[in-house]
Image (cartoon, rainbow over all chains, first blue to last red; front, side, top):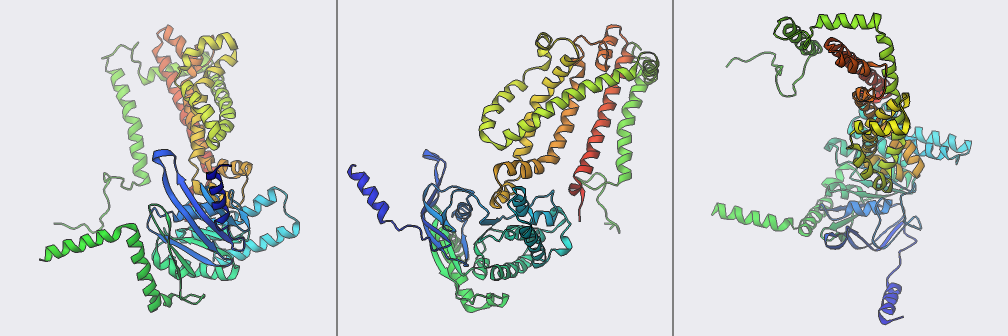
Length: 297
Length: 270
């Protein structure tokens, strides 16, 4: 064993290990796309612990790696360095313990709303992994979710007959069906209009308190991030990394009026400012102000 | 400036709407004008009847073919050859295309090869097919198969690849395994596109009919056209071409109908 190997080995030992007590734990998590000269670092040594039944939101300018981070937790992308543990197991691929809600186009258009929601149950039934009691419980679960999401009337409809908001309700219900301990959401309301989005915010809050899931939520909307999250993780681009983490000073049960609270507005301003600084947009603004000053003069 | 009370986009506005009645009106014009032009040209006497028979001559020849020369038999055998060649390629192309579209190693293994072969002219395979398969029915089916299969396999693979990534990933995060992925997601999602591919390739299969019936045939629409050429029976050539066109049109409509029946969710809007 030569010196360099000893150094690496001891560094390996000194580095803090992933925290198995946390629901999701990342240590030195890195992701590089491509190889050689064309390689880009999407994530650079991310350390993050997400506790059980917490609601964490990830915000940042485009290219900060927030979606990549979420997809690595889901097992849809593979990290190229560091380690990640979810539900007490190293993440090696996608699994039913980490459900995911996508921005759009993830519903199965050939299945009715009810069939979409029952898809995970169908997978299990296919493999004969179900006892009859479990089948009954699952069908009750599907009905509960239809009610919870306000989808009773749309049960037999097909996705292309539904509005964007209703489609996302189906996507959330489908993800919740197998009672996943972790729910990952990748800009799920990004394609919805502002009013529908507000309704969905309260709905997801309700789901979070009812189902006791751990939620990791990616968005580029700072207000959404604060309103939903207990912790807001601000990420920065080039290379993608965690810039800062904010605890949201609001009670766990949120309502729309809180968006007008001074602490909400202060935090929002702070985070927006932070994102501008990290993304290089601030310099553009300064330039703009300077130009305006010159025009006035 | 005069203001119109019920302003509607005009017939010629870009991507403008069109009533059902107008659609059929224009469709009828599109079919009738060439027919009339043909009739006018043929009856003007500008061209020799041998080169340009009129609609009436072609109709008369069609009736004669039907009554004396076994048009029904020619049609049936040709439909059989085309359908058999097409079905044979579908049976192989569907699973193979599904594998190419799903697994990158299979794609790397087979796609460049298929791309290479599909540029080879099917006609040029005739001598080889005669050597390997012989000159009976299977040789005609083989030619249609060669003409259809390699295009079909690539189109099937493309249909499978076009399944939205979000659908695939959603299934993965619900715990779908590899086999379930293929059977319950990729295949199901690609089905409407696959039926369209089957419809389009059926049309291509028909275009290889005449080529296939060069090979020692003594029946069939393509064969009849070839023989009519030898005797300069241009009216029969016209009749044969039009009959093949009509059969194609009917099959196409049947496929479209099947599409509507099989995938009602695509046509249902709230």
